[in-house]
Length: 169
Image (cartoon, rainbow, N blue to C red; front, side):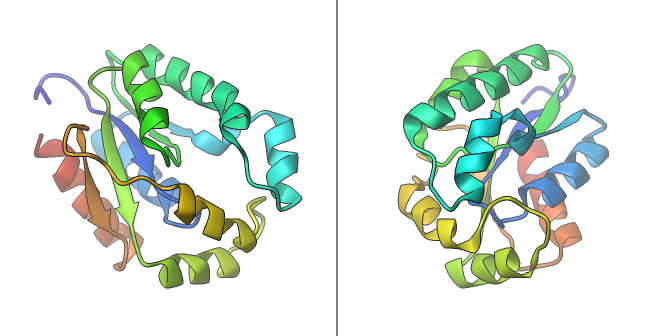
């Protein structure tokens, strides 16, 4: 990434990996706007997940389109958006709208993530859907621009690793 261009980052991973917390910390440090990927979901998607039903590719299409529009709109000034981006084709859709996007995968054990999901309150995603997200997840390929960072530390430690990964490119 050029040092005179603000980074454009998708903080990705399964539900409960810390996308919102780390994304906000990263955006604050980089002095760029932050967007919460969950806010881009149509109401029908939220209702479906709240009822314990996983989203399929067709459900995710309009959501990914909205996030892609956000990324394209922030391509010049930079930004950070939280988005699960579980599948390679989802990331390809986002990268087609904003070619210099950096994918930051928040990586942790299923046990750690399940414990986090179980402990949080007020989120529409039930713990039972973690299994389907883990099954759908496709790791970053060598040809994708991004990096994985471990989430087993504090949010501040994870955010510091995220900053280092984003600014190293």
